[in-house]
Length: 410
Image 1 (tube, helix red, strand yellow):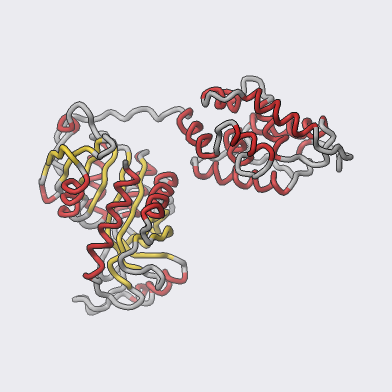
Image 2 (tube, helix red, strand yellow; image 1 turned 135 degrees about the vertical axis):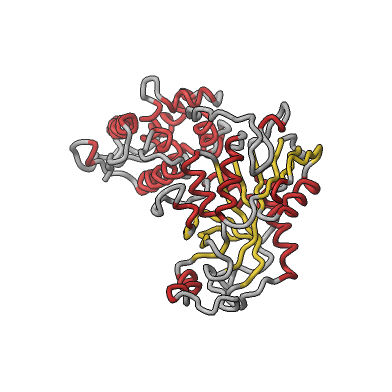
């Protein structure tokens, strides 16, 4: 049954039109082709405008689809009643589920015509073949939808020199970067700048928070900055980076694996964090989701796959302390708190992949401040086997994480 709980008014109208179109052709169930035609038939519809923006004639696609539907056998309509009681094919059910997923990815609390379009564009049928023959793909449609959306009001960029990071927007020159690769280790920030960027300028080394600006081979300007260790330091740096105009941050770090299949030398791309960090509670309530930007996360995963790098995408335990919070018993602390005993095993059963110390706060800041954030960490410890860092794997793990992040940022 087709339900309209989350549908926008325009999406409800398109669904009602799909039912009428199904009856018009004498078909027994609403299919994805009917839904698409319902979207196109809307006067001054967003879908028609989207196709025109892509320089594709929606009427031509409509005509080809009309020919295909007229060739389909006519059957008796199963059931009568309002559009809320329409019988739909399994393909439409999948398309609606995908539309719901697209709405979630785009952080919308409703299902609109754009989400329905992406849903029906996912199903292999006559409509998809017509799309492909017209040079359309789901990826192109999604990109056009994102670009067509109203952009957030630009935050005022400050020219002041910020105390902690030691520079301001005026230090960027005529072509300021909007993307930053953020490392906890100042030597890693320097390595990124010297190895992957050209025309590099060192902006600051104040308090060991080394920062460099340079240009990628693609011509894009990039900031390589240092956050320091832990969430409190990161929260200061990120706040000031946003004030100088940074709109996208990829954290490049190291981590300890909690799962046996996540080996040292591989990378973990965090899609969300179990955030157990005090600094984050000053940003947003504990219940506030600590989630990475989905599109940037997918880009990291696709880049790792293309490079042949062993990667894992999942949930990270983001904690405040290296020893107690990660259940290290070989430390100076003679008394590990009772609730931390066996916490690693509990996380393992929750399918959490790794430990690290910054992503939870970074993601909450991204949600509240309105910038894109992602995190990739090289695995340098196998916590299912030992508490120690695997030094032999550190260089390759860090290099892999950097290469993937550079590729995603390009």
